[in-house]
Image (cartoon, rainbow, N blue to C red; front, top):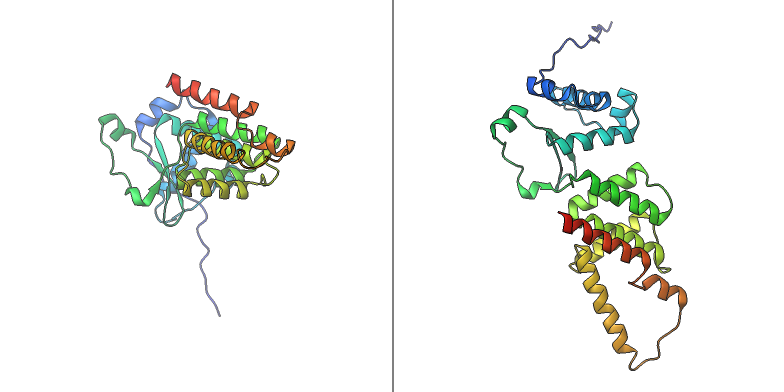
Length: 253
């Protein structure tokens, strides 16, 4: 005969919360923002569980949408009381809850070694604008997995959001390319091999290509292809507007 004991299903543990957090955020943070923070914080404090949970699972547990959970994390990132990074070796995403007491006292924990972490942009407005521009270019919404792959690419390869938008525009308007996310990210990886990390570097490289084409036309008669010309024209309205907007934002900073 096999004997077993029923597992205790009620969690009678406790999760300590710093008073500084309660005093500062109970009145200013929204209910959803508090729920997401406290739920994930509880899981992080349970060292025996070793929990690896996704935003999708958090959304289901709290009866929220994934986009609502993502917006809540952006809020806490902007507040500077959590950090997010990606382990370069395992490609595992980490969320670190910072001690408010140490932040107030000016005490910081040692950062992960540079070889073990990669950058995830914490300027949520910049990221939101990037996703919005990409969706405008493709005339369709990005899926959650596409957004995660794009953020992972930026985290791993350190290319700017402006350059990512430019790559989507390039692949969408060029008849010889595809505009699906995997293809665009491969184009970006190729650009990195060419040393292109920013919009300015892409412009410089594009100008060099245009100059080489102009020199060739001295010896060869250029082909007239309206579609190709339209796709490769660096002076397209979208890129001009996008470059102008990027420069204006940098001037304000």
